[in-house]
Length: 146
Image: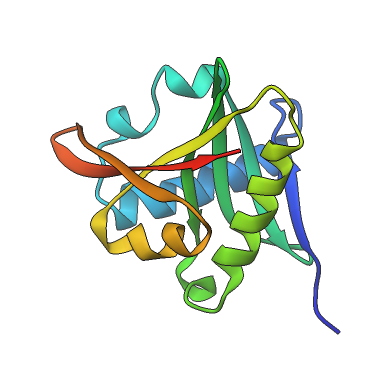
């Protein structure tokens, strides 16, 4: 039997869930991606909703969503290395997009990604927008009209 794919929203008072979120984010973006801690954690985090992705009872990934008028901006989406390239990312992305689409005020979903991940998001229906530089690195803005 397949284990369920679960998305849990992080609240500051849930220390257990918050600690998993922070640990995975640290592993993905500071240790693996080599970002400076001052770049990784910033003012955007204050206005974002943060989530942990589970397969069964195992925390395997994270993401955040920032609402900006009628646009939902997905960020910090990633899975632990041992869960990548197995179809889990696409399954979670489909759930994330469906959850965002349920909000009638959202007309556009966007995210920023490196070249190596473009095809992953295009497979989910996103199209290529502008190229922007964040922290001195080029990123592709991917967009999905709702």
